[in-house]
Length: 473
Image (cartoon, rainbow, N blue to C red; front, side):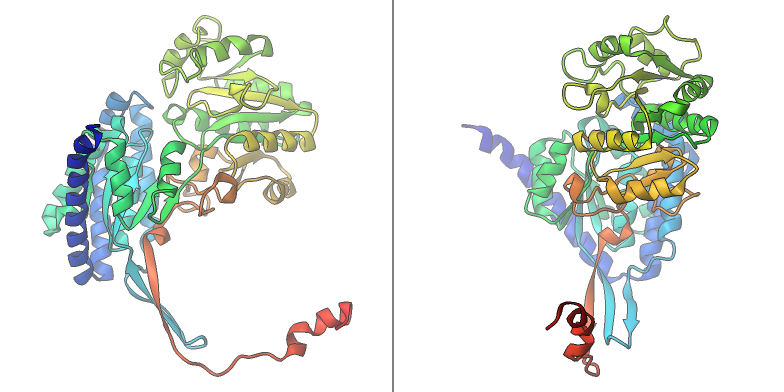
């Protein structure tokens, strides 16, 4: 009975900071220019990339979340931000961005207003920074809703951003966060009160974002499956899969969770994987891994996103695998809710499937995606590019990553053309409104000036002539 009175102060607190953000955004837009938006985005970028601050953020993230490792957090904070700043450097987000005399349409970029960004604990600095930079580049204000474990990192990041803002005489209220302690009620109110929700995180948060009544851009779950076919460079594939799987202790939604290997090269691939530190757990040992990785039906916090030695200890494998083991590859053939190895594991554990041929491997990958991770991405290591195109035609996925370390490629890389992002849209397969990587264009809207032009009305023969010739009138 007392719940409404308990929640009311929380609601008032969120309403207050949204009002402050809105006032700051109106002033920001009123004095806006492309040069100003660019400069403010760079200020937020330097706040996380400055080496000493980057290290502090990485150390705090690992300390407070217990997820990932410091060197890889530093790399992620640096590269994801640097890549994003490269991507947006020439983007036009203020004033006239296109003027087409042929159509008579002039397009003017406009801010959305106040962005509400729900972010996960797996990347408690990099994801907020990515959203903040994109929001500022578009002339918006932004309020971040971190997960409970990500609060400390978000607070530190915002203190660095505000220090940069102070140098430039900018309003700190352009970038805020939900005041600690966070709560579902506060996050819900933010989503209802802001002008656009950007949501990266649990499927519960995604569902709430998409049903809050505010236009939302939310992303689906990852559960990456990679095929290794008989034409692949096995040593190269093993090295890339290992680097990707182990990066930041598999916290990324783009980390490989299953590898399907064509039978003709299975044994050779297992040997190549062993050379990289991937220890094979035969099918006879799979039940033991499952029992320890999901001891009570939930992922074991002593194993997820941990360094190899801690993960091996938690799974009872410390003395059963070589001393240089970096991850486990567990043989399995089951898919679905009764076979948890086929889902996302957030750990240095890989499900290993064996397929007699490429067609079967493709069917297995499809089934895994349909169980979990539809729309996100798949990978293939092959010398036959036609097979990559075939996956893109037939599988429920928005991305096919070819001969690359998946974690480094899916969210943008300096060696591919994808936009740098930590949030990957999964299209209709993943229940999302976007099928691209989240990027700056999702943080602006446009006004179109529409002028009259010479008539362009076709006659019926021009439109239906070929159809009539085939089907009759």
